[in-house]
Amino acid sequence: MAALDEHRSVLRASQSLHMTQPAASKLLHQLETTLGVPLFVRHARGVEPTEYGEILARHARTAIAELVHAQDEVAALRSGLAGHVAIGTEATSATTLVPRAVALLKQRFPQVSVSIDLAFSETLLQRLQSGSLDIAIARIQNVQERAELNYEKLEAAQHAIVVRARHPLAAKHGLGLRDLVTQTWVVPPEGNVMRSALTLLFHEQHLPFPKQVVETSALPVTIRLLQLSDMVAPLPVRVVRPYCGAGGLKLLPIGLDLQLGPAGVVTRRDRTLSPGALAMLGALRDVAGLMRGRAPSER
Image (cartoon, rainbow, N blue to C red; front, side, top):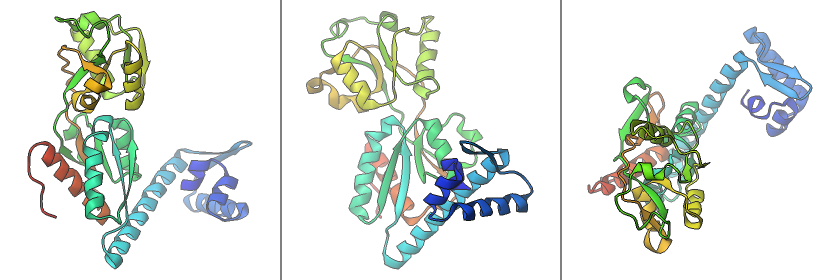
């Protein structure tokens, strides 16, 4: 089911599973007969899942993820802590918390492999729920309504408006958001938490949102656009500090209270973390504590 949903072709799905196409077709037919509902609609270009098929495929992916975790736990018991952990992070933590935590994990447990996924908070939470991520560093709106998730709040990030050092506004004082309406902004796409907060900030100050925008969520692209042009961008201060000075960027003296709320370390309540994922969680907690000025825990 998971392979069919991914490839949308019985032939490609069977090839990915190293089985024949007739055998895959027979298995699909047996499933549909057993459940008494159509799981996929056949057409000339391949197959498309029905509503029933989407449900079964989602549960199949979750089951596969759980089997992988079980395999990791068995391997960890047999030969010391090893296995794999998949984490996802939003942009701010991707350049601060996560790299330091992964480095600490590898120092403690070199045999644990790590994959890191960078995406918007909303996407990360979906991947966490589907089982493709063990841990997400993300922002959650209305945490109290997400009882199915564990959420450990991190320190809230401060944001600033960033320009290149030779930007026409870089040497001016007494600037306000009104002075930036006609500038070209580099902003995340619509639907992103920061984009929504920035839009609200303009609205609260009775200002139109800038018409000239470049949309991207990629930090390296944003930094390079700022260095090469007179664009402006809202960025976390901790992330952009290394690019100030020799990096040619500057923070404008404009208050930017985006009210994003802090990101947090998120896991699923109904899922037991593998030993490798627990070790990653411990490293994240220790690094977050160091960033707040606390001593790391003994492990």
